[in-house]
Image (cartoon, rainbow over all chains, first blue to last red; front, side, top):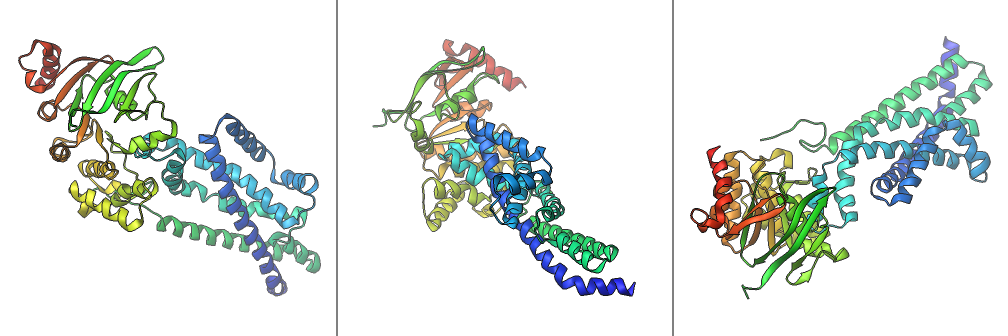
Length: 224
Length: 247
C-alpha cells in the first residue's frame, strides 16, 4: 500500500505534465469543434444545396467512424507530415464539430420563425440576422446539451495515445512500464480524469449562470 | 403633396399550392392615411402585409413605395423595409435582448449609428410608447401589452414612413389591448401612415380613414367607416361586424 502510494506520488509530477497536454488537446479540439460546428450548421441550415450536401457527408463521415480509425487515417494517409499533437487536435476537433453542429441544428430548427421575420422586417440582411439573432440565441439554448461535449472529448482524448501523443494516459502507461505498478497508477489516472471532468463541468455551469437570461431557455420565467 | 401616394399596391396575388390567398389586391395609401383591413381568419390579411414589405414574395403584382417598385428590388429591399415598420401579432421581440437593446440593435447594425446616438434614439422611442422605465427588462419579464409597445418602439426607431400592424392586439387581454390601441391612436394623431389588420371592430371603425373587408383573398367592400351603418355598399361589412358585436 505504502509502496503504491510512493509510486503514485513519485509519478505525480510526470503525470501532471500529461494533464497539461490532455487539457491543451481537449481545449483546442473543443474550440476547433465549436468554430467549425457553427460554420457547418450555418451551411446546413442556410446554405445552398451543394453546401448542405457537403455538410451532410461531413457529418456522416465523422460520426460514422470510430476515433481510432479516424486518427490512423489522418496519421498515415491524410496528414502524415504533421506533428502528432496537431493531428489529434484536428481529428478530435473535426469529429466534435460534426456532433456540435447537430446540437446547434436542433436548436436553430426550434427557434421561432418570428425572430427571423422581425429581424428582416427591420432591414437586417440574412447574414446580420444569423449573426445577431440566430447564433446568440442558439448558443445560449444549446449550452446544456453542448456541455456534454466536454466529458466526451476528455475521455476520447485518451485515444490520442495510439499515435504517440504524450497525454495523461500515455504517460501513465510509461510509468506503469517503468514501475510495474499498473493498479495504483491507472487508479491515479482515473481519479485525475474524474477531477478534470468535474472541474470542467463546474466551469461550464458557471458560464451557464453568467449568460443566463430571465425567461429565456430552460430557466424560470420571471413574468411580471 | 399630401395627395401623392406613399404606397401603391397593384394587383398583388399570392398562391400556396392550389389555394389562392391573395387575388389581385390593389389600393393606394396617402401620407397620414389609416387603412384598416378586417375579415374572417385565413382570408389573406396577414399575407397581404407580408407581401407589402416582401417578407413573403408575391406571385404577381407590384408594390411601389414613394413611386419606387420594390417587389423586384433585390438587396435594396432591406432599405425599403426600414421605411415600413412592422408590428407582429406575437410581438417577436428578440428574446435574448433587453427592451432597449431590442430597439437599438437595428440602429447599430442596419443604420450604423454610433452607440451613444443609438441608445439616445432607442430611449426616445421607448419614452414615446411609455416604456422607458422598462428599458432594461427582458421580453419574458414584460406583460404582453408592454412587449407589444416595445415592438412598436423598435419599428418606430427606424423612422418608417408607414407602419404595418399585423393583428397587434390579438394576443392580448382587453386591458392590455387598450394600452396598445392608445399608442396606435397617438401615432395616428402625430400623422403616421398606418396599415392595420385587426379583429377589433370598434377600434377599426374609430381608427380607420378607410376600411377594407377581405374575404377569400379579395377585397369585397371598402370605404370610409362613417358610411358603414347606412351605405348599400357595406352590406357584407355590416353582417360581418354584427357577428363580432353579438359575440
